[in-house]
Structures are given as C-alpha cells and as structure tokens.
Length: 217
Image (cartoon, rainbow, N blue to C red; front, top):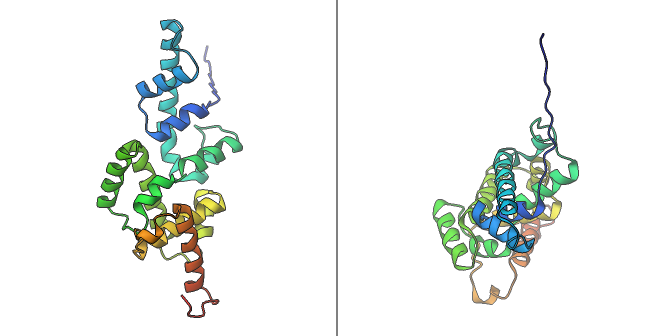
C-alpha cells in the first residue's frame, strides 16, 4: 500500500531572539541574554537545555531567512516561510534598520571595503557586534547598487525592498552623501544627530535634481 505524507509547519519568529540575532550575538550569548531576561538561570539544567535548543532552532531559521530578506518581495510568496504579512513587515523593517552610531561612522564616506573595516572597528569601540555592523553596511551597499541612476530612487527602494518611506529616504540620503563625498565630520556639525544630517541631504537632492532648483545651494 502506498502512502502520501504531507508535513506543514508554521514558522515561529521570536521577537527577542530576532533582535539579538540582528545585534550579532552568538547562540551562547543569546542563551545567556534570554535566560537572564526571562529569569531562567535559576531553573533546572533541563529547562536551560530546552532554551538552548529553541535558540539554536531560531538561529537556523534566521540564517535561512537572510537570503530572501535580500530580496524582500519574495517573502510574501516563499513556500518555505509561511508568515503573516505583519510578521514579514516587521522582519524587513528591522533587518534594514540603520543605527545612528553606524550612520555617524559612514556618512559621507565611499561605501568601500576600507569603510566597512573602519565601521567594524568603530562598532567594537562603541559596543556593537561586527556582524551587526557588517549587515547594515552590506544592506546599504546592496541598495546603492540597485538605485544607481534610477529616476526616483526613493520609490525604487520602497517598491524593491518594501521599506517604509522614512527608512527608504534615510537610505537614499545616506547614499547621496556617500556618492558626493559630503564632509560631515566638521566640528560645527558634530552636535547634529545622523538622522538630521541625512534629512538635510534630502532637501539638497530636491534642490539640485528637480525643476525647483534656483541656484541658491
């Protein structure tokens, strides 16, 4: 007698573990972090073993999710990751989020291997994991390649990566500053938050590349 077997499994994404994964924590570091946060450290070794197994399984799922996250639209139709739309949106926005400390380090610099190395070294000094810094840098460089010479880069990022408009603008403005090598290290600019600097870049682009440019920049 022949049998046909079908197995279906709902993918669970733990928000806390996803956050520490994006931070760049290892499995051991994540287990320690979660056990303290959830007060598991004082319980039995069996419960700690179960927590480690859960963290390891979640990390494996996250590693598999990385590739489709490089091309976010396919997450909505990917057969291996049956996720609800709100969860997909949360994954995308958090995966592409840019930390102010990272922006401060790379604003106005060429998106090169040298800059990535400087960012990783800077990240260690301010308490950021190398892998987390590397992910944000590679996201920025990937989007920079995709929007090169696009007539409307912001809409291109929104459509191609499903990012919120504010985050898409932040990417485009950061790429603009890097492409034109704006010097953002001046002492007079040191008090500005990186998001304020990228916001100013947006106004500059609007003035330079639209019909509303009157020559006052």
